[in-house]
Each structure stands twice: as structure tokens, then as C-alpha cells.
Amino acid sequence: MNDAGLAQLVCPTCRGRLAQNGGSLDCRQCRASWAVEAGLPRLYRESTVRGTDRLMRVFYDGLPSLHDPLTRHLLPLLEAGGSEAALRDGYMKRIDLAALAPRAGGLPLRILEIGVGAGANLPLLQRDLPRGIAAAIWGLDLSVGMLRQCQRRLRTWTGAPVHLLAGDAHALPFADGAFDRVFHVGAMGSFRDGRRVLAEMTRVAAPGTPIVVVDEQLDPGRAHRLHHRAAFRLLTFYDPSPHCPVELLPPGVTDVLEEAISRFYYCLSFRAPPPTR
Image (cartoon, rainbow, N blue to C red; front, side, top):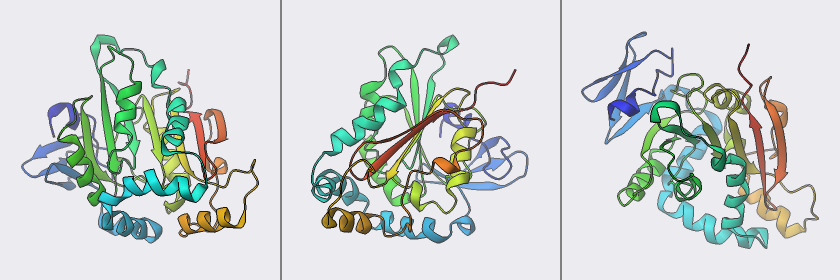
């Protein structure tokens, strides 16, 4: 990882600064050491990966090359309507990249996707970034298999710089207020502690920053037939109560909006608390 990328990372245990040391990143504060393997920093401890986090990682590691094609072609069939493009456009408008303004001194803006997977959202981020805006994209995932697939995508990538790392959404390895946009798609219901993940997303967002979360929920505004409910239950087998987790939002967030962007998916958007005076 280059110096620009390293400068944004902190130790996920104590949030101390990290220094490159051969094949590892070492914390200057607590002296913890974090491996870097094939270009991927691994900023989590295996002992913390439990329950549904471990289960879903097995699932994603097992089919990284099939995940995006299945989403593109199978999901519209299960929903009996809609498209992957319409679903993604539904949450991209809430990420609202068009409202970004250049940083003072020409420093790049920072965008974080938690659960970057194989990188299906990268072309959309590049599409929606305003012209002339310098930006860097960060992608974090617990599945190394999916990250390897994303690395293959980046071999022909010509857009904004992308930094990938293996990490746990429950303990993000970034400083407070580090990002100008933060979003997550597709696994909120499988996290072992959704409240903690939402708090971490809010912590690393700059004051007033839009934060977007997307996952499964049967659209309460539609009628659903038996085959819809059966397909939805198949997709959400790991979650006893798939729903938009508004009740888990941290205190102080503003502009909370819950909306259905397809038959099976909600989009929850909100803003990090404004700066304290």
C-alpha cells in the first residue's frame, strides 16, 4: 500500500497509526501487527469472526466469480420484475456524488464501500463522480475471495484510485470522520451486531456526510404472492426478521429516509451528525 493509502488507516483495536514493516502493518500505539498478503492488508482478527459473519464469509468465498452474474440475472426472476440496474440506480442517487465539491488544496475526496465484494459498484461511482473532482475509493470486505475477484476487475480499471483491504465492519480501521461518502449494500441483515456496524459507519463519516445502507426487506407497499415470499425467504435464510434497521441507528443522525427501491430491497439513508459547536 502506498503512503497516501496508509495515511488513512488506523489500528482496528486501538485506532493508533500504522507503519509499514515489510509484509505487515504495525501499530505504533498498541504494537499489534497486521499482515499484508498479495497486496491486501488484513485488518481483523479471526477470533472476532463469529456466527452469521463466519457463515456468510464461507458462502461468498465459495462463489466469488458467480456472485455478480447471479445478482444480475437471477434476482429479477425471483422478484418477478425490475432489474439490477434500476436497483443500483435507486441507491446511487442517495449516495449523491453529484453534490461533492473539491477539497481545499486539491486533496482527494474519500468514498468508502463496506462490503465491496467483486466491485460491481465501482463503475457506478466513477460514472457519478462530478468531472474535475479528485477522489479515492476504499473497498473493505471480510471475504478475501470476493476481494481477489475485485482485484481482477481492477487490472483493467482506469478510474479513480481504489484501495482494497480485508476488514470487519464491526471495527473499521479508519479514523473518525475520514470519509466524504459511506455506503453498504447487501449484508446488513447478516452482521452479528447491526447496531455496532451502523455506529462504525457513522463514526468514520465526516460531519453531515450521507450514509446509505441497502439490504433485503419485502416492500410493505406491495402485495406479495406465495412465490414472492418463498423466493424472499430463500434469499434471506440467515436472517429471522429481514427488515430496515431504523431502530439501530446511532443517536444524532439526521435526514433519515427509508424507502423501497425494489420488491426485495430497502434503501436506508441518513447523515452523520453535524459538527458540534
